[in-house]
Length: 273
Picture 1 (cartoon, rainbow, N blue to C red):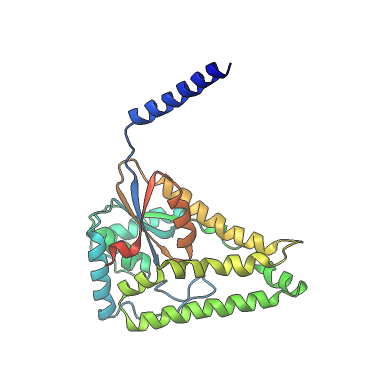
Picture 2: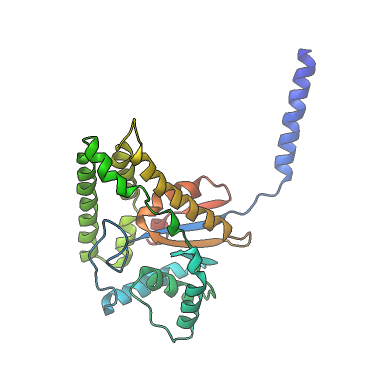
C-alpha cells in the first residue's frame, strides 16, 4: 500500500510539473502608482494642504517636465481619481482639451492626468474612483470616543496628521512637483499615512460597538472597490498602466496590486530618478 501511494503521489507531482512547464508564462501588466497631493483646495479630505499656485509659470514648467519623464513609459492607459460614473463627462472634457477648446483646471487629475495622456497620444482617460464608499461611520466616531473616554485617540490622530501635512508643505515650498511626488511616495510616509487609520481609528469603541473598526473598513472598502475598477479596466493587451491618485489611497492599493500575480508594481522612484 505504501509503495502504491508513493507512485500515485509521484504521478500527481509529475503531472503538475509537466503542466506548469508546458504553459506559456503570462505577461504581467506593469502598474505605476503615483500618489499625489490635491492641487485644488478646499477638497473633501479632512486634513489637506493649503493651496499652492499650481497654475504659475514655474509650476506649469515643472508639470511639463514631470509628464515628459512619465511619457517615456509609453503607458497604454492613464487612470485618475474621478468617479466611475463621471466617465462620460471626463471623456467630453478630455476630448475638448485635445481639440484645444478646454483649459485645464487646477486639479491634479487634469494638470497631470490630462497632460500626460495627451503626451502619450491616448484617446481616453480611465475614471476609477468610487465615492459611494466614503467614511459613513465618521459621524459616530466623535460620539463613541466621548462615551468611551477615547477622545485622546482622535486628538493624537489630528496631531500626527498635521505633522505629516507640515512636512509635505515644507517640501512643497522648497522643491519641484517631481521632488514632492518622490517624497510622498516613500514607503515610510505611506506607512505613516495608513497608520492614522490603524493606530488610532480602529481602537475607537473596540470591545463594544466597533465604530472605529467600521470606519476603517469604510476606507478599505472604498479602496478595494477602486481596485476592482482597476482590474476591470485593464485588458490583456495593456503592458503599462499609470494610476494617479491621492497619496492616502496608495498604501492599500499598493498592497492589493502587489498580491495580484497578473500585475507588476512599478515604484515611483524607479521612474522619477
